[in-house]
Length: 126
Image (tube, rainbow, N blue to C red; front, side):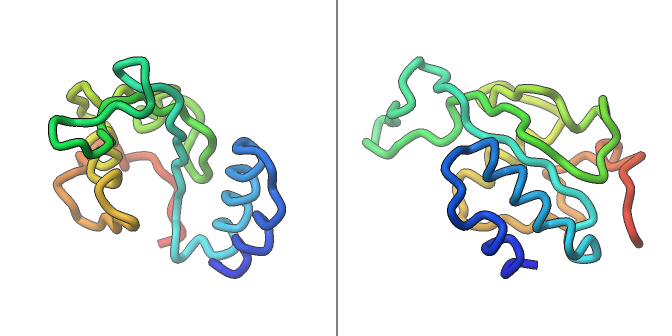
């Protein structure tokens, strides 16, 4: 799957096209990734994407993310709002997105970050 993603996304020059091709590559093995939900950072909560916390580190949680695409998630599903402000508490995937800002890779399985009701109604090959 990762080789397919690399092949599909090489040479892409804009964000929208990258995510479209990324999702296309993810679909090559839906057993490894039964669904995908992609968001991109669109604005800083403080109006400056370079906002830093008191220790001078970039703040990863003070911004809004916007839905870029998905697969195997029904249109209008509760887990897929068009925008999420990561500075506000949320019962959705916001906690998982906030946590992912602190890691290069975040694997969630049976995790308390995602309320079980958000996964109801999602298509899965299992």
